Image (cartoon, rainbow, N blue to C red; front, side, top):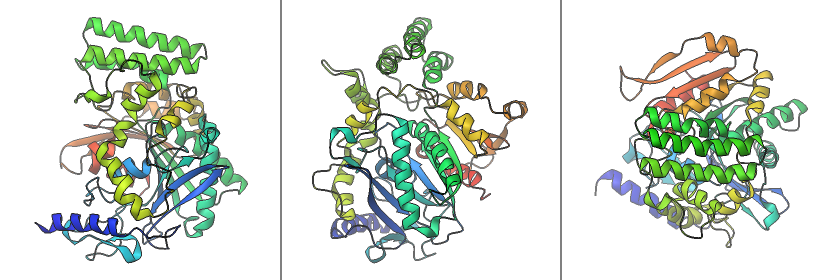
Length: 463
C-alpha cells in the first residue's frame, strides 16, 4: 500500500473512531452545529476556518432545492477531502501540501499538514444544508419546510445572525456568498435581505459580495434556450428542435399566466422531451449522457419524485450517502437518531414547487443598485442553466451600468492547469462581473477545479 492510500485509510479509520464528539464541536479550525431557525426547523452548518483572519469567509449554497452543501458541495466540489476522503488539490480551504503528509488530527478537529500547518488556499468556507430539510438539516413536522425563497432567506438570516454573534472574530472578515444552480436563486434573495440587515445593524458582518454560479435566476430564459443551444451543438435535429420549442412554449404560457406550480410540472415535461430527442443528454454536461436511473418517469411516479430523482439524487449518490450516513455521521456526533442525511430532500423540493419557476432578476437589479458586488459565472457545457439563457436575463437588467458593461470586451483568462490555454473569459464593470468558464458543465468546481479556484481568488481580490 502506498503512502497516499495508507493515509486515505487512516482518514477513514479516524473518522469512524471519532464518534463521541459533543455538540457543538470544540473551538478549532473546524466546527459544526445546528441552529433552530423556526420552531421545529433546524439547519446544520459546517465550518472550515483559516488560521489567518486576513482571508475571506465564503458561504457555499447548493442547488436543488434539496441538494446538500455539507455533503455534495463539501465532498464533491470544493471541500478539503473528496468523496473517497482523499485530499483535494483544488480545495478552497486547505493547502496543497503533499497528499501523503496530510492527516486527520482528531485532537484539534481539523485536517492538518505538517509541511505548512493549517494554511488555507483561499478562504474559510461555511457549508450550510439549506433549505430546512436538506442534508442533515431537518423539520420536525410538515409545516417546518420552506414554501418559497422568502422563507429560505429569513431562515438563513437567523442562522447567520447566530453564527456571527457566536463567532465575532468573523464579523470584520470579508464575507462572500457563493452558490450553484438553485442555490444562486436563494443566494440572490439572501444577499438582498442580508444587505438590509447589515444596514440596520441586526447582523454584524462585512458582506463583500455574492457569486451566482449556473444559477436559476430566470428559469424561463433557461428553458426557452434549451432548444437553440442543443441544436447549435448538434444534439437536436429539426424535428427535435420543434418538439423542444413546443414544450418550452407551454412552460412560457404557464409562467406568463402566473401558474407557477403548473409551470414547474411543464418544465419537467420539457426535460422529458429533451431526453427523448437527444437520447438522454446530461442536463449538467452536454458532452455526457444522463444516467439511466435519472431518466423519464416510471409508471405512477409523479413529477416531484421524477425531478428529485433527476436533479437531487445525483447529488446524493449511493457512495456519498453511505459516507454521510456512516463515517461522517459518527464523526459529527450530534445528528439526531431519527434524522437521515438526505432523507427529507423530496419534501424540500415538493414544498417549493410553486416557487420554483419564479424569476428573481429584479432582486439582482436591487443588489446592483445597492452597490453589492455581484458576479455571474457559468459553465460552457451546462444545459439546464445554459449560458445563452443567463446572457438573456443579464441583458434585460435595469441596472444603470448595463450599457457600460455591454460596451466592454471580455478578457481571456489562462487555464491554471494548462499554461497557454484559455480557461475562461471575464468581463467586469463597476460592481458587476461575468465569468464564462470553458470546458465546464453545471458543477464548475468539479469539472474545472483550478479555474474555479482562480475565479474565487479574483472575486475575493486575492490576485
